Image (cartoon, rainbow, N blue to C red; front, side, top):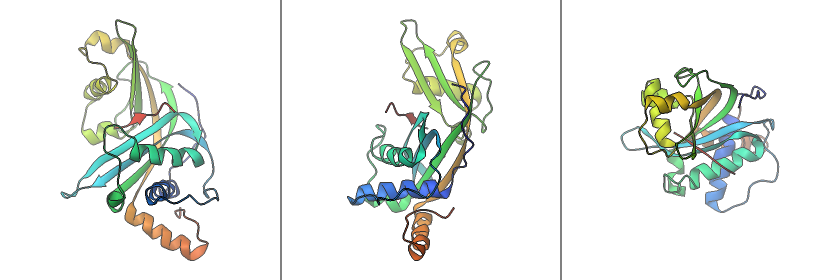
Length: 223
C-alpha cells in the first residue's frame, strides 16, 4: 500500500463527533439527521478510547480502525462505536465511564513500502507488518505512529511485539524478520477529553444547536 490521500488534519470536530456518536449510542437515542460540519474527506483512520484511572494514568479501552480509505462522516461514527464496544480485548465501555474518557482520532497518510523491517522512524511512522509462516498462513498487524514511543520500545522490540500481535506463536528469528514486508505510514491525530467535549456542547448549543466541536495499540477492522 503506497497510495496517496488528501492531506487532512485531525481536529476537535472529529473527536467531538465520536463522543457524540458514542454517547448517543449509550443513551439509546437517535443521531441527529444533519451531517457533521467538517469536510467528508476519504482516508484510512483509527479511533482510540482511553480512560483516566485512579492513579492519574490513562489506560487503553479500545482502538479499532481501517487501513482502507473511507469517507470520514460515516467512518468516524462507525469506528467510534466499534472501538468502544467491540474491541475483543476489553469489556464494552459503559455509560458510567464516559466522563473519564479521552478520544483520539488518527487520520492516516503517506503510505510507502519500507526497504527492510527497520526502515522506519520511531515517533514518525506507523508500520504495517505482513508475512507468511512455513505452512503458508498469512499474518498481519499494525501499530500507529505513537505506539512505539509510548511503550518506550526500540525498533526491534516494536517489530517483535507486532509479530506477536499478529497471532504468530513461533520463534521470532532473524530469518523470519528478513521475510517481513513492512509498510510505513504517518498520521495526524487529535485528542479530546469528555470534559472538553461537554464544553463544545455549551458553545454549539448557544449558537445553532449542532453537536460539533469548534475547531491517536490498535486492531484493524475487516468490515
